[in-house]
Amino acid sequence: MGKITLEGLEFFAFHGYYDEEQRIGNKYGVDITIESSLDKAGADDRLSETIDYEDLYKIIREEMGKPSRLLENIGGRIMDAVFTNFPLITFIEISISKFNPPIGGICKRAVVTLSSARTD
View 1 (cartoon, rainbow, N blue to C red):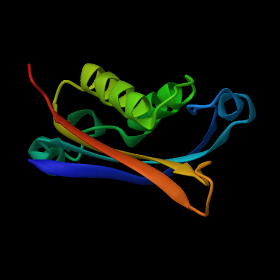
View 2: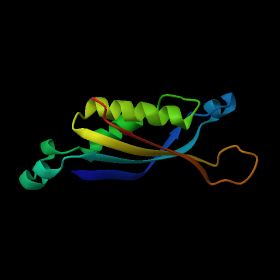
View 3: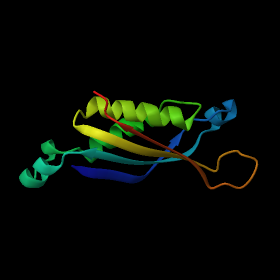
View 4: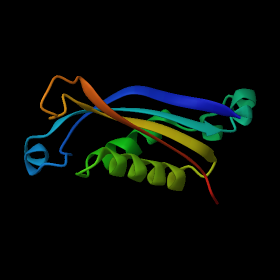
């Protein structure tokens, strides 16, 4: 078993609880760690035996492009899509960050972290 992590992915997207947030957009960050068997890839040195970072990024980018009110919703959708597209992944942990959230004070980022194990 092994882990693959993509850190510091950044997107400009139109998420937020308030309608204004969905109109003007904001900067978001994503960190994701997946667990999968990496033994074959380590032995064979073949991309087809592991999780392709580019494909993982494309899934995240696609889900980030769909407006949501809550970071929890975005994270859940990303996890569902990743599990669907990568049957060998057994566990996902994802953090979604909203930069400068509108909370009435200074806050660099609001972060929601979710994790899930494959159930099927």
